[in-house]
Length: 184
Image (cartoon, rainbow, N blue to C red; front, side):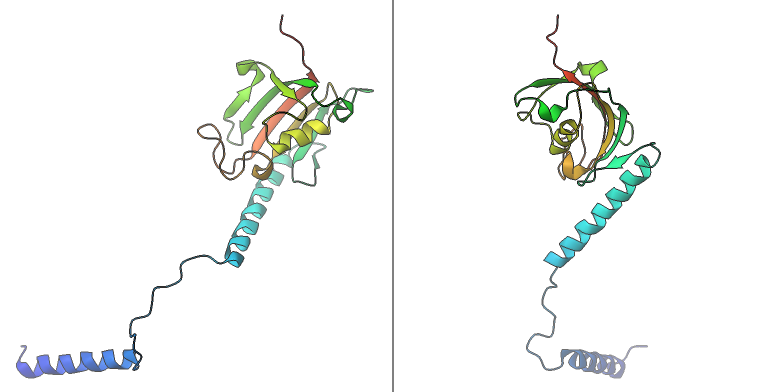
């Protein structure tokens, strides 16, 4: 089958193929490929991800009557707005509010609720809640009940708050805003 002439011919053909690929350049094998994303790649990726999240939030909120959208992408539905109520934005900084709340993920996993954990005390201007909560509460009045979808950029962001809140989680918040009452 294989004789010296066949092996020699195969070797010669292999060498000819190698030489045609080499092209005479000092480095016949290409250098390592650049696998680092460019700034444009990262911007395009994040724009696409933001559009996907916005589409998801819009789909969920489309089932709510009277939904409004803030400039930051939060979707709100005012469930109850008492007439002549004091606006939260008119209260002095440091006022403590009480939130009867339920914060959940879109898969219905409850993060915290006032039934499980008691009402949430919220000091105006001095709490560690994400900016989306401040935005919602700042646009409310005492006694308001609101339902909101908060995008990750206004909630716990890219990192989440493990183990309860995953990365890039959209938060469903339902809350009633009142002045804090000292427990009896």
